[in-house]
Length: 72
Image (tube, rainbow, N blue to C red; front, side, top):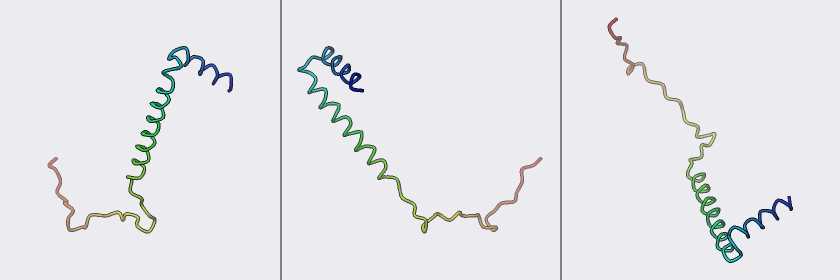
């Protein structure tokens, strides 16, 4: 694992240069932080359903059902 990480660091240095790496690191950090905040907001927006407050299945009352049929 250490050899792979070292290879990635050397490739990044060759591609971007030592002056550009801190800026890229900050950009990646901001991106991860925004993604984490967005996923946390999505999870927090979902309503929690408690066992005691489980939704009751509603059945149509017999008075409201329509027994008409289409002509055959």
